[in-house]
Length: 289
Image (cartoon, rainbow, N blue to C red; front, side, top):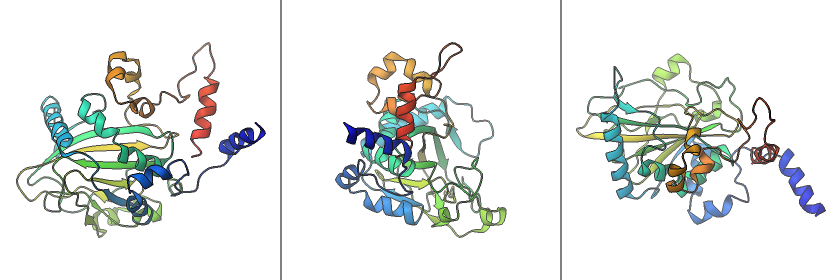
């Protein structure tokens, strides 16, 4: 009993080191052979997760994104897109909860990872900037960025992506600077295309400099941009309303409740009651992992 209390106390006060794989996560990284992705994110700021999604699931998600885009006013956007995708199609939810995605999200931004922004886009020939546009995804965070990464982005290209097809471009190792690129760096830093075959998923952390590529060939690059955030950061999209939708939650992947923050204390107080202390203690412990 005393040992259990000591371990509990340690979890409440001790944080894992940046880029550390916890003992709890290690078996999943081993089982899915994700050490190359772990190393890539730590050393280069980005990686490609191979064999992450079944091709037929990506076909289903592609169809869903194209349908939802057709129902969304586009105004003057540089390419067709659709926001707030979580909870709007089962294929998108299944991609959001793929085992390799969740394992790498936990590695990058810690246990208790939150769903951030889920956004779809369709790039066609001639679209995408030919140069420039490099940025860090955690662009509302002041610098220097914390040593612990705050956000991780998964770029799920339904058809795969190549340099000629408009693949995302990154500046390797730029995450080590822990800052946003300066204007001249945003326009002129040397970047490389992150190519990924169909079924593979590109991933980068919130600090690495990256930007959209330029599509030179016919066809489309249909992408789900899925971001996950460390639990103490504010999600871009608020999906908490889905927790109250009993029909949706009954059919959603089991892991969805965690992505929606069902076990966290945020928002549990009211004008007449204080926060849920059980959830508060659980959240406090989880945030250290």
